[in-house]
Length: 141
Image 1 (spheres, helix red, strand yellow):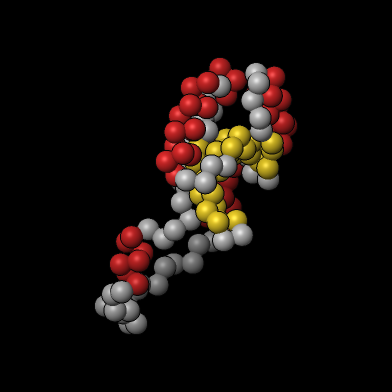
Image 2 (cartoon, rainbow, N blue to C red):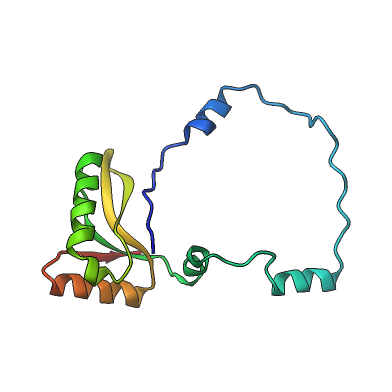
């Protein structure tokens, strides 16, 4: 399971779009879509139009629990610590990886080092394995 760095700041494309003039009227009128019948709606709900990726399937099954290992105060320190912890606990992580998650707490920016997308039981088991291997952690919702 690959965990990417998350950032709560707006992407540059959104910031740039905010400076562009807003177009209130569409250049073309949208065509009316035919209203689907009840059987079409039911069949569309029963079978997804595209197969789920492994990440999407994992996200659906997850209950939003995570294991936090550290919370450095700088991005450089967080990246360095993430690399070190991923290498040190690779066997305990069982294919998961620790990611950096930026957060603002009481006006201060921290960088949480977390394994995300776990069930409560999986998070508790992972934290127990990490502690058994000498690590420090806690589970978070």
